[in-house]
Amino acid sequence: MTPETIIHAAPHGKKKLTLEDKLYLVKTKKDNISHITIEHKKCTRCQNKVCLRVCPANTYEERDGKIEAAYENCLECGSCKVACPEGAIKWENPRGGFGVTFLNG
Image (cartoon, rainbow, N blue to C red):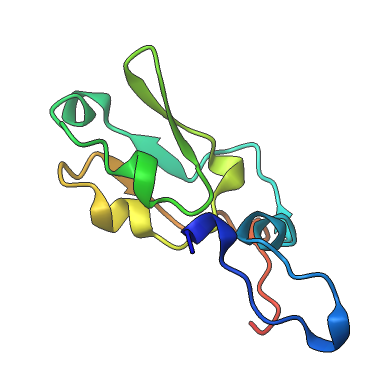
C-alpha cells in the first residue's frame, strides 16, 4: 500500500477516504500574507530538494529551477523547516486568526 492510498476502516459501510480526500477536509482561513519565506541563495545549494517530497500538502513546487511555496496549501506541520538541510525555509505560524483550524484545539 502506498502513502497515496492509505485508508482507515470506514464504519458501517461508508466510503473509505483516501489521503487526498482527508486533506481536502482540512479547514483553513486563507491569509494574503505568506508565513513561509524561502532564501533562494541557500536553496540553490541543495541537491536533493527534500521540501518537494516531505510536505504532505505539496506546498512546494520547482518552477524554472526555483522552489516556490504555495503557502495557502500549508498544513502547518513544520516538516519543511525541519527537513531543509540548508535552512533555506523560514516557516512561522500564520498570523492570528488565519491558517488551519484544528477540531480539538
